[in-house]
Length: 398
Ligand SMILES: *Cc1c(COP(=O)(O)O)cnc(C)c1O
Image (cartoon, rainbow, N blue to C red; front, side, top):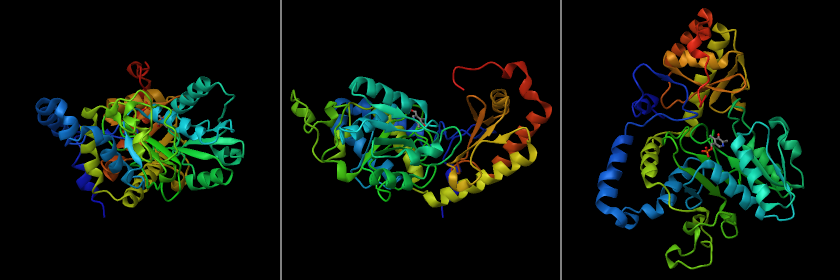
């Protein structure tokens, strides 16, 4: 059994704060400062250029990739870390399209995080080959998977509503019509059990600064099914993907048969030190325990809000099996209400036009936190303190 009182102790969260935003940016692990300091003082300062060999910096894309892959059911040697999620989406979709040059349709959904759609738009304009991006309602994705479709690109858990796709069904249907799937795990990894190998996923991508707690701008990751590693085309063909980077050949030859071909260029080794420290916490976590606990906390939260805050309407699916690990409520004055909550140390966030989001992260959120957060919310609504002028101006980041 995972000891969630113990995992709570592994985070440095400001006194009195109830942090319901680990779905957007995880809190700092207590081990992070020492890990960063050790990188600076024991690696960069002392090793300098030698660190690429002596501290294995050059292969951390892969060693950390394996640790991340472990959390999504990936075999060793099938996941690498680096770059940003937007870049990894581009890379995965480009690779997927190259697998069937005859097909022209990329299928996503209208609930996807816009950067995923934007990156596909950019890719399509670069190729200028008559590609079309379709984005039906999330509930209609399965029906749109036809033999025209080259790539199904979906984010498993909707960043606004928390609605969860049935990935097993999507992958099975896509494969039955000869399409491939790019599975965005941004709101899945560290939030619920994922089995990329068991579901026979083609590509998976995600970030590590949300539920994995590796810090703002932490590296993204990409998974490629072992059966594709010989043939997958790295559209972003940087020298880290080369068969022999230090041969400095003028021609690009992708590393044969290995996930290395999805590496691009020099990653941030400083950021890797934070990812490594964050992953240590996950060594003691069982994903099924995490899921059970996430559902208990979410159900408690939803019930308490519905009982005590009638102004809010649930925007997430009511069935916990159809949700990820955050809960969304609609409220006309949602932005102001979130600001009023933040002013009292209850941190959630807001997504346009009227969604209040609350991340339910068992590693550091307890039943008591949920209870207290709802009390603060209830008082804000009862007193209408959200209407104060200081809660009305929109910041750059909501
Ligand atoms: C958070 C998130 C992103 C963010 O992309 P970055 O390149 O890391 O800024 C992209 N896609 C989805 C689905 C997300 O949830």
